[in-house]
Length: 282
Image 1 (spheres, rainbow, N blue to C red):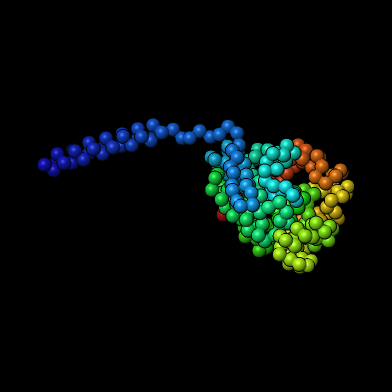
Image 2 (image 1 turned 135 degrees about the vertical axis):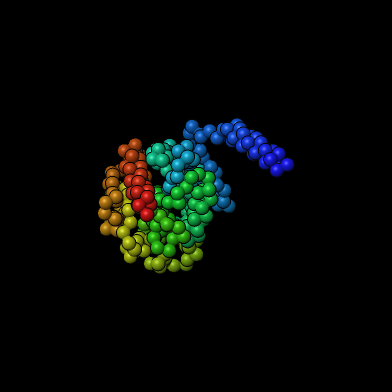
């Protein structure tokens, strides 16, 4: 009787093993996309868009959060042929790219905008094989939010910042035009000039040095280079940091050339390679 029961159990186990193996091999893995995906992330202020290269579904990747210029949106960034040159270079690294709505068109790096980006970043990370690392890219007004996200007190860590024709001095922006003053007052809930503790460049001057990639030029008649980008030069960490000075107008076409795109990709790619190596040593 015991021999019969043992034989029956052995036979059933063998059958289950064969069935399980057949079931495993019968369901092929989902094919990877041939081109980068675009994931739409909704908020009340407007949508943001996550671009995911195919490689970031099978291997862990970092994320670059892109903050837009004044009066623009994530949709404008997504549809912009110029911005696409930069984004495509980052996707080729490979890095996932979050085109952020920043809480609205003219939020000027406010605490509310940064809190929304923190929420977007967390949601975006669930859509690909995210390694948890984040970098920031700010364009014009977006420079304030990108820089602030990398400073002490930010709701998430940022390993390096790239800024193109950036505003970095909030008080300077507040003092340059009544329209900017009104927008900043609304975004921050202020009736007067922003205090130094709200000013990203003032905070950066007191914080540890950062890996920085700066693009700016003396011909920019919208954002003064000397009082914004140049104030960060001595806060740039030696080694990976780079300053690219270009001629021409604010956010001109040469800021979005293949050459600048390659330099930007090398900057973030180098930081990510270094971070990966350090993680493996732990």
